[in-house]
Figure 1 (cartoon, rainbow, N blue to C red):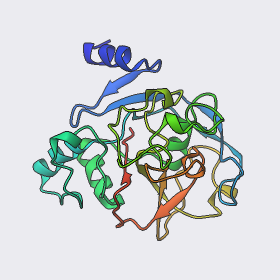
Figure 2 (figure 1 turned 180 degrees about the vertical axis):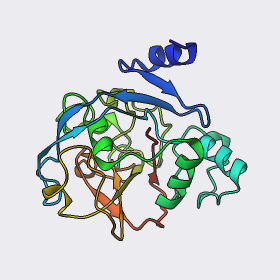
Figure 3 (figure 1 turned 120 degrees about the vertical axis):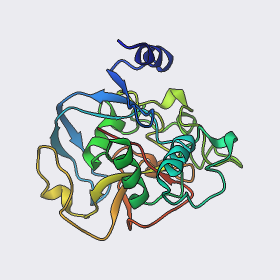
Figure 4 (figure 1 turned 120 degrees about the horizontal axis):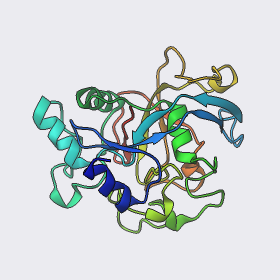
Length: 243
């Protein structure tokens, strides 16, 4: 195992294979192929259903301000809509105020992609298929959320180590909402393919997942679905890459 992956595995105690993306330094973890139960039946647009996914890699962390700063400098792409993305004290916090279009440009530049909605959910639920990344019971101390943020907003992407998913994804609940590749459609689950679903052919909004520092327990469920138009930017909205 290359040293950088070995050190990462030891530091973050992740059991699944890791790779480091050369272009942007993203650490990605391998999620093996297999079936899982997607959705939790707690809202009309997320009924329980079985889905098979091929193996894939997904970011251990959301993309940081430091990573996004390198992308902006290399490409001339527009900057996030805030003053923190160049602030060294927030360099290891997730980048925010980026649209789905911005996130798509970043992953294309880095040689990666955005995760599908199904890939995002499987990695967040872990091999135990839990309601939250850490288990089935809500625990506000395992992620950055509205109950414990105090006067702060985001935390570093490696924060809340007790809330890591079983596959090794940090902050899949809380901290920032994360864009997925899929278009949103409320009834999609009822007619979606049982193997490697990629979302509807089109639509007006893109899926975002995971809740944020501004969210409550319900929005931090691994199965909770939310959406916004692709050009939307907000203070609690970022993304993590996949491959």
